[in-house]
Amino acid sequence: MKFKLIFFIFNAIVLFSFLFISMLPVLMLGWEYAAPFWQNSWYLLLLFVLILATLDSYFIINWKLFTLMEKRDWDEIRRYLEIQIFEKSRLNEQHLQILLNTYVVKSESANILRLAGYLKDTRPRLRFRLQLSLGIGYMLEKDYRGLRDFFSGYVRDDKLVKSGWADWYMAFGMLRCDNTEEAARRLEFILERGKDDMVVVLALYLLMEIPGRDSDKADRWLKKIGEKYSSADWAQKLESRKDRLHVLALSGVLQEAGEWVVAKYNTDMPTALPTDEVSREDNIPARNES
Image 1 (cartoon, one colour):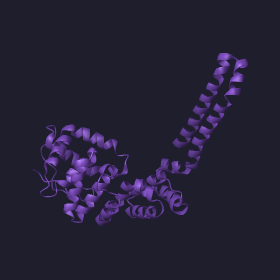
Image 2: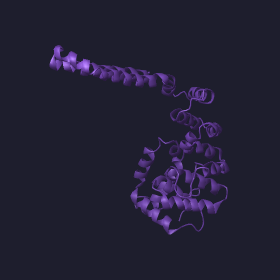
Image 3: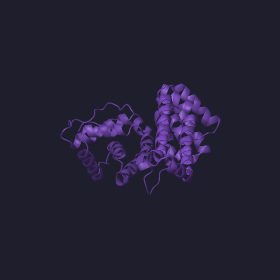
Image 4: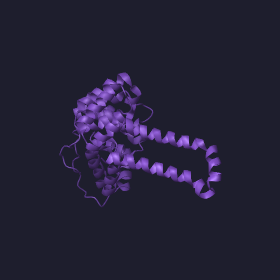
């Protein structure tokens, strides 16, 4: 009901605005001068109609989807989008992202992997753009070898991919496959090139689990992040990024990792580090007290 109301209010406001603007020449100049004005400016009317028609067409085409989303009917959303994508081959990034969100809400990790395989054969460019959301499927399935192999097809030796998130996913998969040295090198590469504080914190959090990797570079990043954020600042930053599916999926460990960094360098935080309790997300171990 809200969606329909918004749609009709939007059209009413646009039409009222257009009528008001179109009547201004009449009110200011009178009919004698307004008629020639509109005869010479008829293209403005055509432009308005085209813009309104384009916007309304978008809403009408997606009317059923928006209605289902308003109802939060995840089963029907999934069925509708699967028909559009798999049967009718109507692929667009917005629909794919909504379907991925639905799979995560319903914990259907196998379907995420099915979608990843489908895009590999049909739309590899879309698969590349959605790789962070698609990679969640491997995390939920605890298929760490698959996670490593999936992102190894995208990471590069000379630059970070997706601001380092793809590199972190691959490193995590490597670490879970006992490929410790390769994982450590990739995590250190993130520290060397990374600009996204969140992925840098995750890299630090994993790197400190690897013996002999407590490097000066890691210490510099720990100090930089710890001094930049308070616990509240980090929680606020995390909340502002939860509209991104890969951040939402890792929000628990991101909160834990951020608080661990802040606790080392911010006097407002308690000095005790996280306990040995296993993290809820993806079996990433919490750090021992030190």
